[in-house]
Each structure stands twice: as C-alpha cells, then as structure tokens.
Length: 222
Image (cartoon, rainbow, N blue to C red; front, side, top):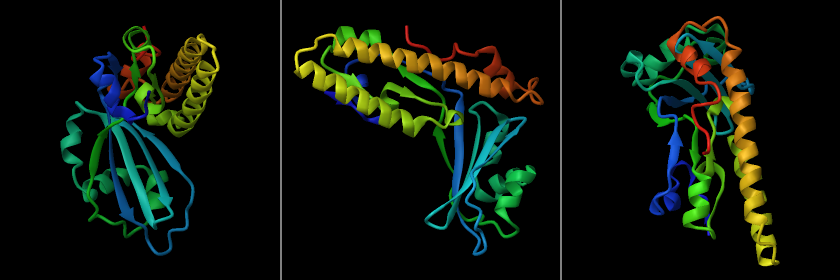
C-alpha cells in the first residue's frame, strides 16, 4: 500500500504515525487576471524583510502572486485581499515590474501551510511494514527549494522499483528505499539552510533569523 495523499498524509494519520512539521511558514497567494500585454514568462523570486515573494504567468492567462511569511507575523491579517497583497508586492521593484500598472485586485487570496514536513519512517517500518509513502506524504518541501514536484516523481519511481523488487523476492528493498529517502532529506535540509542563509541583508529580521538559527534542525527523521 502506498500513501500518496500529499501533505495530508491520510494513511499515515490513520496509522497513528508521527509527522514532524514546520508550522510557521504559510503562503498567501492569488491568481490574478494577467494584463493583455503580459508576456513575461519568467518566474520572479524576491526576498523582503518579512518573507519572500514569487510571481509567474501561467498558461491560463493568470499571474500567480505568492507571498511566504510566518503564521505569527502581525502583517498577515492585513493581507487578506488581492488589493492589499498587490500593494505590498509593489514595494519590490522586481515583482512590481511584472504586475504592471493595472493589476487585478478582485481575485480571492488564499492561505495554505508551506513549511517542511517529514513522516517518521522508523514508525512506518515498525507499525506497517507493507506501507510506502511518497511525495509530500513522505517529505513535504519548503517551496523555496523548488524541488517538490521533482521529489514527488522521483520518490514515486523509487518506491515503485522497491515494490517490484519485493515482489521479486528482495526483502531488503524497502529498507533500501527508506535509506534513500533519509539521504534525500539530509540533502534537502542542507540546501534549504544554505538558501535561507544566503539572504544576508535581512539576517537580523525574525523571519530570516529563525531559519538560519534552526538550519537543518526544523524537520528531520529520527
């Protein structure tokens, strides 16, 4: 059986398995109607004192505008509408240039958890030896890593190979899969810590200082 239920990790929860999470990081996002002359296909990423932004135009002729910040940031309550989110985004020249002059301010703003999360694989092995987990159900990545989709596909392929090997009579295949995912987690934590630490001009701001001080320790398999 494979848990491929995403961040909700439905099967793992039903089995009572522990899941370590960074509950601070959230993402506010809106799908704005793109301006008729918006032909910018680049993904623009920008840091600010309270978090980080990205925007990209998608094929549906909408522009995604997203801001990642901490759940306990007092500014969160003042960013509940597209008009407020766009106004804040315009403080960043790189993002403002992509929004243009007549940015859509009628789109709904949504909020979702965005922090790292990891399933306790030791618990998985002990409670349900025939169960695999892949993608976000196994390890949910901070969006700054830009590795979530790749991880989902790569972990699914690795799990499929391990399951096939087990059916072929290789009982250690699942252990090898777990070891591979531990290695993935370690590399991810190191790269994420380096990415956050690279933003030095805001190193004294709470959002960035928290992530540097917790580098590599926020979510880890035991």
